[in-house]
Image 1 (cartoon, helix red, strand yellow):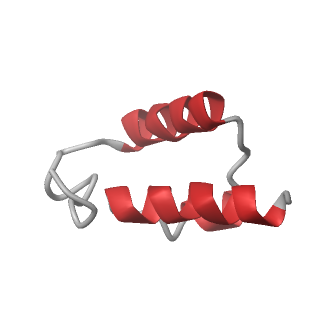
Image 2 (cartoon, helix red, strand yellow):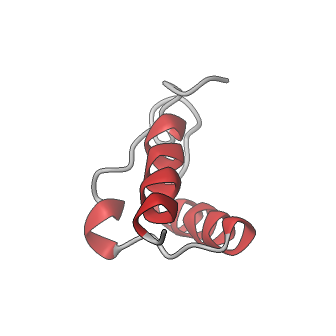
Length: 59
């Protein structure tokens, strides 16, 4: 698994599972990913970039 791994196509994640994954990431990394960013998250790299962006904006 790498940054290009697609949640839906490669991992077979369904919408509800995706939401749970995002919520877990938010809790674990102490961030809140904006709703408008969720629609752009398709890969592991996308969620990583979203977390990094939110943390950078908080500084």
